[in-house]
Length: 199
Image (cartoon, rainbow, N blue to C red; front, side, top):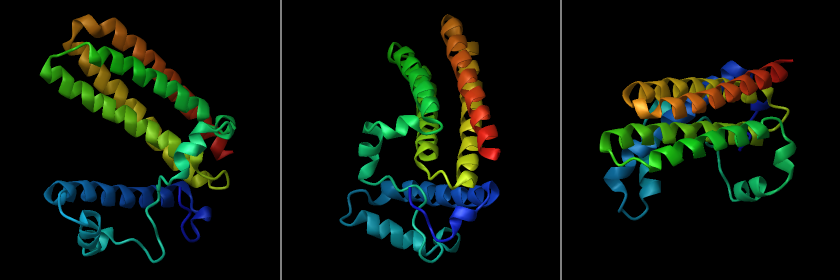
């Protein structure tokens, strides 16, 4: 994760605004990508287009907040990250996502698969946020709090989508209820971490 200018002193609300700007840039990047994916230098071309949009231009000396550099894989293959606050939440939600993907792999109905894959993507989003939260510096509680609030929103959304699946697929009610129970445990751990960070 990059640490830009004087943001170590930012509170959760300042971080929330910056994360929203960053996600808007990422979203716009992927909107532009299909139209120029086969062009040489497509990334430079897209970045030039983004720089022409005032609300997407980064502040001076600013990089994208979440920069998954070459050391990311090394960091999570090491032992140190397991001792950091939130590492257990990463393991918890990853286990739940594996359980969901196992269920999804057993279905061939296209309409179910589309809904199911959207849930898989939301799991990925939540896991990515947890990685960012665990990987962020301990002296940046505002960033950690902002990420934890977004993780909580992702978990709530997952529970809502899964309950919708259970309402449509009677055969999955028991499995989905078990997954939602596990997600409730993830939610409770997220609340615990929020309380720790706010002290």
